[in-house]
Length: 445
Image (cartoon, rainbow, N blue to C red; front, side):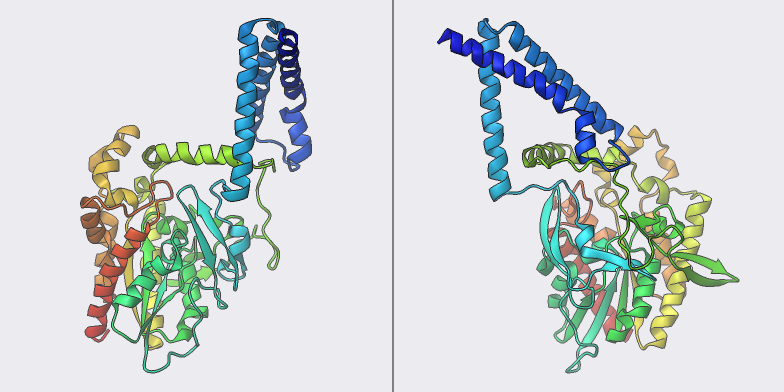
């Protein structure tokens, strides 16, 4: 019996040493990596793993006759059996993802907009905090299909914006446009033209090219304060390999330039910049990563450079000032375009998680980045945008007060890591926006 245990321990030691020699960054790079090679952080991780395997293997070989080494071999065997069993179970009954959104199946290149939802696409939009089935209609909207003309005296409202409008993080019935439709007067259709990653210029182009032909009476542009100014200024110039159009002022008039050079040839899929290796995915590792990541969600909000540092400064830099000017010019153009097509434009400001949960996050952000709190005003962007819209006669709604009120009651309105609205957040937005829209329609706008 003792001899067999020693042999078993020796075999384990040899397997670990062999694994350290064979399963290393050079072998894995040759088998699974693209020509760009293995990223340095991957390479370091595998070298650490190989060193640990070699050290444990040598320890088992050296002390194979000792109880401690034999117990270690038994422990390793148990862990391997448990790990393999869990991996098999997860692959069969609860497959895990790595927090990727599946843009490859839901999006395609567009010559004017940069990208768009692929008509008729179906997939799963998943990340650490949600897993949502997604279906795109025949027109490329995350909505049901609509006839070009409203029937039976129905009035239509077109809602434009980015991922906060498309709401891929929640099931379709819980997206605020769907919830809002139920709260508005009978005979009202709310059409969702939101596309992930879209900035206001892309939404304007979508309005001109497609949405206006559905004869909306009211066009609602949702501006997410967290990145729409970045999208306009060029800080965020692409999504997953697709490049975005850019607004410029030309002789006092707004022009929107097509996606800049460097985009893939139209009709071709973008080439991913994945220096990352295509290693087999461990569902057990992803489950552990998901669990540990959820434990540090609030920390993630603080450690990833908060966008509020760019757009909430009382003295914005030149790039941000130019973005504000371009945004106002774009809203004025959109308003004229809507009026010329028997519609009205309304603008809605969607606040960030930090703006809504200011007491929870902002003080920590100020301390971490050693900011002078007096140089920032989280409410300023919504306030300034409201003033500009009032001057232009464009109806405006800032969602921040309603969302801060709901947050004060302890409601979870955002996914902390993803920082998009939860189903409860969509419900709060739907209630407030429905009241705003009814007021506008009653006033004859």
